[in-house]
Image 1 (tube, rainbow, N blue to C red):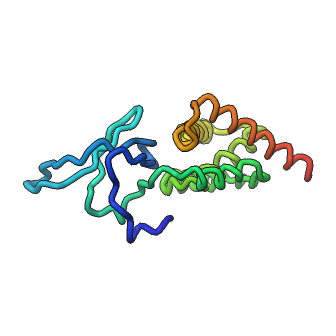
Image 2 (cartoon, one colour):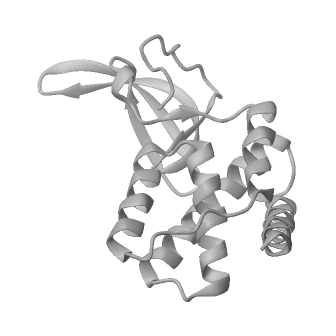
Image 3 (cartoon, rainbow, N blue to C red):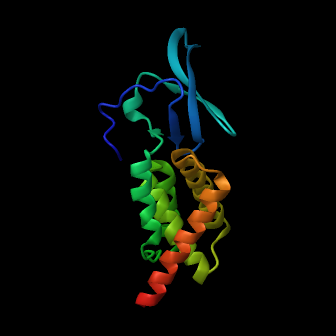
Amino acid sequence: MANTRNRKPYSKNDWLVHPSYGIGQVKKIEKKLIEGKKIKFYRVEGEHSIYWLPVEGLEASRVRRLASRDQFRKAIKLLKTAPREMDPDHTKRRSRIKEVMTTGSLRSVVRAIRDLSARNSEKRLSDTERRSLEQFIDSLVEEWAIAEEIQMHEARSELKEMLDEGFAASSASN
């Protein structure tokens, strides 16, 4: 996980990625009364959710800033690389998926999409794996669209092309 010790505070309009809630934008700082104490929170609004992130204690947060264009372009290059074979043991695959969901790092999400997509082309995914893959793809496409300032359907199309290139390269080397 990225170094969170010196995490800078967020500002209004910053885009954030939450492993569970997805992508949202800081809209304002609000004070809420919690157990008799006023605590400051960032109000983060996404397409399907609103959540409050405590201003204090960001070190423990799993939330990250939206990747820069450069970071994003480096990460998505992984889609063109040969997929890593997923463990035949479903509990180990489930554990890997859970870890990706927990950390929410861009690179781990991209690798999971690449590897789950490859597995799906060879073997049927379980319902949990399929839903996880769809969630990872939706999150990546949304972040891609924002980072690259393109439409989501364009990002989805590019994603498919890159995965196809990776599968072709992998097939050619085998």
